[in-house]
Length: 131
Image (cartoon, rainbow, N blue to C red):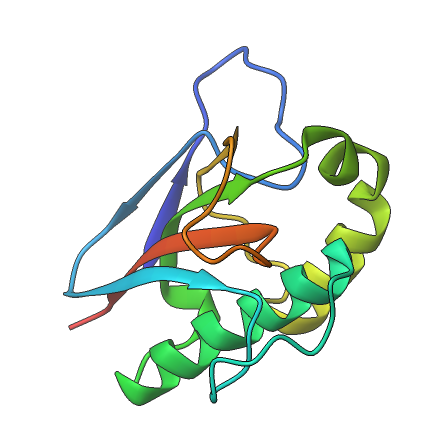
């Protein structure tokens, strides 16, 4: 289905992959934020918004007959690097609960702001569903 790429001699990354190889139907998930299906924020807590953002990604994948294990790339944009770093354990637990133990290549980027004022996190994803 997908092959994790790990260069010889490199330390194994925790919570992401250095690379992945996949073949199949591409599903691009646009940037998702921590609001619900009605575009309403239920919380301003960082981890709560991460949870909702991941649930939104899974909903888009499901609509495309894809699953979290089909993810091959994620880019995380957040407005507070310290909130991200200080709550990594909670974020990891939420991630494993919703996405599972599948860790595609990821990038994490602090940004000045997101388009929605209350948004603290936005994640853009790419999945490949096997042929």
